[in-house]
Length: 181
Image (cartoon, rainbow, N blue to C red):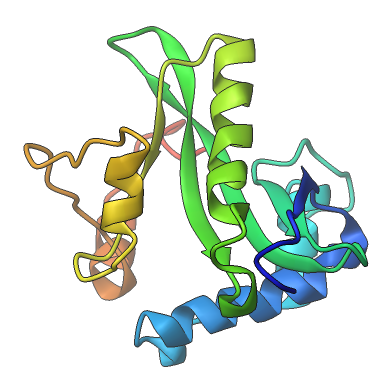
């Protein structure tokens, strides 16, 4: 793909999943953590198209995706996102989990167009926020600033995982405290 070809943005389709999974692994490599990326085609297909349900009864998807495609309709970039909710604003927003554009398609506007698509969804649905995290050394910071994104320095992310997550889960003894109970 050359920088003169403008990609098209569309919702991800099942046939796009292998390319998106490959790009997620490329992103993990770029972020210097390939050993932490274990996403499979089956997992992403389930999350995007049947809600990731472990049961046989499909549920509504909780993950959404858009792809930037070239003139052959081949994915060259993607955005994976889900809804969050602001109790202060009283409305949903979009949390962008991952945005990636293959090096061969950078400079084509694919990243800007993927973000513009998510911004349009927010505006049309009355959502007030489009949020994401970025690794601190990523050179995309300049691009994000150029579109008006603000770095949030007053909020500090926290994460529970592994043994700490399992340990805290053992303390959930009250009936109805687990999701779905």
